[in-house]
Amino acid sequence: MRPRVYLGGNGFARSFQTYFSLAKPARRTDLVLLLPGLEKIDLHPTPSILDTDASALAGLIERAPDGESGVDMVTHSYGAFVFWHLLRNASLEVQRRLNGATVSLFNTMSHFIDEPLSGLGPEQLYGMTQLGVSTLDAFIGPMRDSYLQALTSYASSQLRSEFEAEWAEFDHLRQRLLLDLLEQMKRPSWQKAFLLRSLAIYQHPIDQDDVNRLRQLIGPTGCIRLFHSLGDTLINWRTARDFIERMGIVARHTPPSAGTVLKDVSGQISIEFTAGDHLLPLKRPRFIARVLH
Image 1: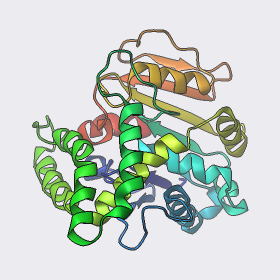
Image 2 (image 1 turned 45 degrees about the vertical axis):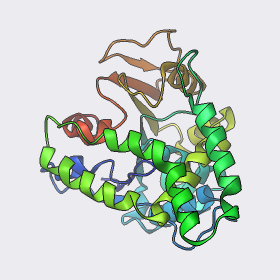
Image 3 (image 1 turned 60 degrees about the vertical axis):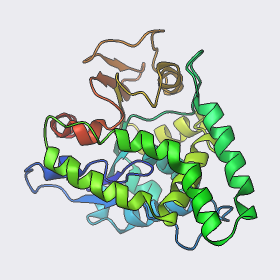
């Protein structure tokens, strides 16, 4: 079987931790890329944070065992942006290994679209974050660290809240993951990485050329499978629908019911709607096991 490469979200890379805790037959090689914090990279890096992350992903794909059979790809949230960015300048070896791939993308989008009257929307948060980053160089030493923490405080609290309510399964893992997340959030390296990756989502939207490129790379034997949680409060329906339609799938003006599967005219791209929130891979590992089988 083809090795499978996993890449998780921004701020919390272990998106598939509970899935890996399930007992699974050892028939496939699973490779996970954990994106690091940024100890030495400044807040205006060259190359960009997406370039750095995409290079790390390319290295993992190229080193995957059983290379003759290629690899499959699984991403959650920000991980999809890294994958799309990789495809824009993919090496010949990465292109070869993605031929015939099954690409599974959980809770992702092309770019944020604000909902009317939704309060503090993504575009406003982007503007505030961009302004904060641009003024960060005015601070040094402890003042800089304090300002960096303040810049990430709102998003950090939103991420933390996802882990505070008990989970139906693997609640012992939730508690361990929450403690680990709280510890990471204190570190300037985590805060820098979180800020830059958040900005990258706005600065590098997915366009039709990206979709066409992926179709071409996976070839006629590959497929693209999208999964969207109907309770995802980070990716509103206008944002989700825009991405779905860019992928060539006709979407309604209102979200369909859980269990609905839509496909493009070729049948090569599909999306399944399901119950859950943005942390679907963590909170519903048996669903992940079913759809990845």
